[in-house]
Image (tube, rainbow, N blue to C red; front, side, top):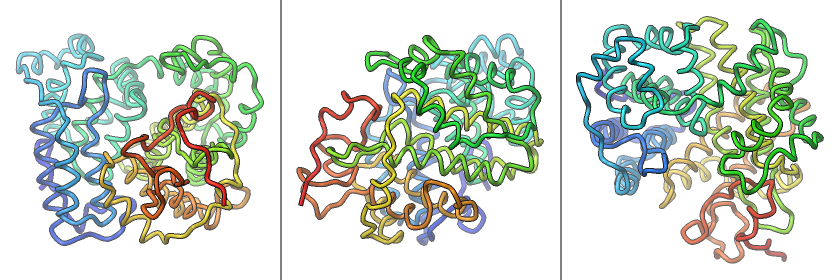
Length: 448
């Protein structure tokens, strides 16, 4: 049984919102390696705050049908560079019962093991639903800062939470809340909360879709000029330093009423997949932006969030609105790249979904990002299909994008056009695709 200190995947009950078959014994193997990760590794694998993605990678390939051998190989490859767990201080864990002392430890990396123990104890006492309601959605100062922190760190805390909820693992939920607690909250304080205030009361029917707002933003020179290649953090030091009110104005226009949830969920997924796949250069090999994929990879979990029985309607709408606003600011932060839809619609879909998925699972160097992306795309196709009329991504374009992000082993690295080809020596992803500088080290496109 899965509890706050024990990971246990049930192959019947814990299949997630999208799965592609399960190998015999894979659930047990995945449970074992995730338990090992829980007990032995820190949340960051280096001093720069790079995240431990083992939970993400293992659960993604598990849901996509990985064998026990593939799960072990993925774990062995990615545990090799993790930092060891930091010691827990029982006195600090006990002191966190005091709200003031709890908040004094927020944003401090060294407090992660203490927050983990604290949330494990809280989940044991209150259950996952009770803890989320008290610590994330209560509306008080503690919950508001925790909600802000869930969207920090390039969405990693909310991705981690999504995995915990999707696969019914209280221990992973505890990890996610502890991870959120040691992230910063400036994104929420400086963007989401002001946009929410400007938008007015919740449950407001949105008059503009995410796609419509994206198109308006593309034409906004103030926002385009707000980010520079040299910015250390292009959201904090760029957009929110040079054009905060302009960004807040657009973010506030993305609102969702309870009646709009199904179509807005599809709109959100379709829009982020569109700008992630279509941000290409015709004279360069196909590449996928590392920052954009986090918007796609996190989108899959909102199907689960919207169905949680213990979350009230207001909390669900806030989650979805903040995600839509995050997607808009992320697009601007990469210098609002031109979007070439024909690069997607004309891309050859030479491999079926079965082949795309099996190759993602078997990728020899993936840390989880590729498997997450492929699973999110396959899920997105299912969610968006009823709402495809007028959407940029439709029909077989989902599969074409799946092909775009794969390693094409039949192509030598010097001529490959697939986005992860040659990843061993050139990197799998491009970063900040709207800037010319981002493309300098990537090859020109092979011409027949």
